[in-house]
Structure formats: C-alpha cells, structure tokens
Length: 95
Image (tube, rainbow, N blue to C red; front, side, top):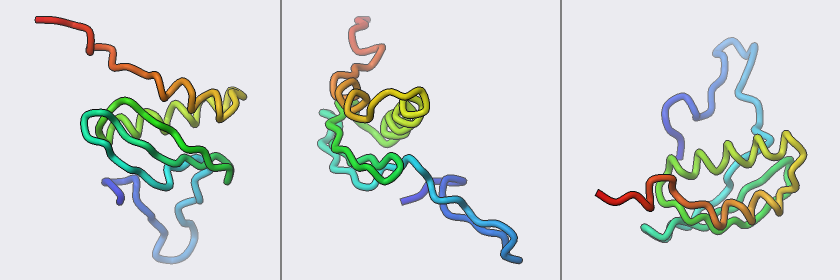
C-alpha cells in the first residue's frame, strides 16, 4: 500500500529510481483501537513490534522514530520496547 509521494517512482529515461529504503515496515496486523503489531526492517534486520497507538499515521510516526533512533545508534530491540509502551499525548486529557 502506498500513499501519495511515498510510493515507487522512477525517471522515464532511466536516470534515477526510488532507492531501496533502509528502514521499512514490512507487514502490519491491525488490532483496532488497541493498536497494531508490525514487522520493521532496519538494514535487513527484522523486528516484531507491538504498537499501542492505532492508525496508519501512527505507524508512519513509529517508522520515523525507528529510523531516527537507529541513526543515533539506539539498538533496534530497545526502540521496539519503547514503542510497545508508547501512549498518545492527549489520552489523559478530560473535557
């Protein structure tokens, strides 16, 4: 599944093409409002992540966090542990 500019692309003359991502979500099992379980690959190493925030855009956020953490040298297993306990900033607010 691809959204907008996030899909595959290439130049019609063959001068360039979309590079293979080094960080990617390779599968997702949605569990409704409880979040999802997904597999993330970082430089080919795969990890299963139980993620508590529902929705596609929260998966994008989790992927971005994984990429940044990896760039900073945080082990992939630690990133998965943190994502498993992530909570929405607004979840505790009451009207």
